Structures are given as structure tokens and as C-alpha cells.
Image 1: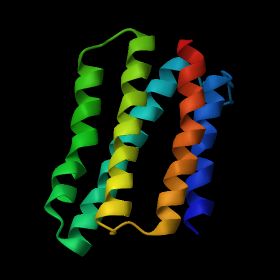
Image 2 (image 1 turned 90 degrees about the vertical axis):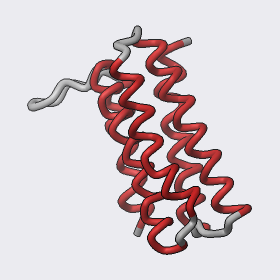
Image 3 (image 1 turned 180 degrees about the vertical axis):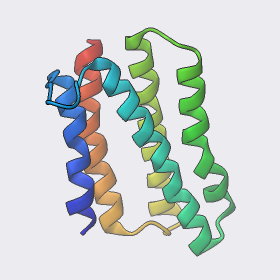
Length: 132
């Protein structure tokens, strides 16, 4: 079920990358920054849930980190390419925490961990190909 919900979340990244305009919305590079920022912020919510089920103090601290990180990126109104580099770094940090909570703390389920690997692998090209 999580794959059925998670994988389609990649569609807006690729619509933005290819600058697809739909009747009601223009998917362009500015929309890529907005969508990527929302998704990166959302990833912190997972750690809030991990804290509620495991009482792991690192999880509760990390639960707000992606949102605060994205806020500071957007608040500095950086150039587009630099913003994407910072967002990519954020995704990699979150993936690093996923590794930590999966392998060391053992509080992330295998199917979620695999999904996160797939999603990060799907997100990175849409950012990287814009900046190189």
C-alpha cells in the first residue's frame, strides 16, 4: 500500500523537470523548488510517528529538523541552482537518518526503508540534471 501512495509522489518532480503545463497548473523550475520543499519538510513527520511508537529521543528532535532546514533555505532566497543543491543535501541527510533508524535503532520497517531508497533515487535526478 505504501508503494501505491509513495511512488506517484514522484510524478510532480518529473512534470516540473520536463516543464509540463497542465490546464490548471504550470509545472516549472519554481514549482520544483516548492514541491521539493514541501516533500522534504513532510519527511520529518515520519520521525514524529517513530517517536510516538518508540519514544526514541533522537526521532523527536529530528522530526522538526527537515522543516526548519527548508525554512532557512527558502528564507535566504538563494539562486535556483544553489537551492536545489541544498535540497539534495537535505534529502541525503534524511536518508542517512533512515539508515540510522533502520540499521542501528531498528525502528523503521523494511518496506518503508526500501520505499525511501526508491523515492530518493527518483528525486535526485530531477534536481541534479537541473544544476549540471
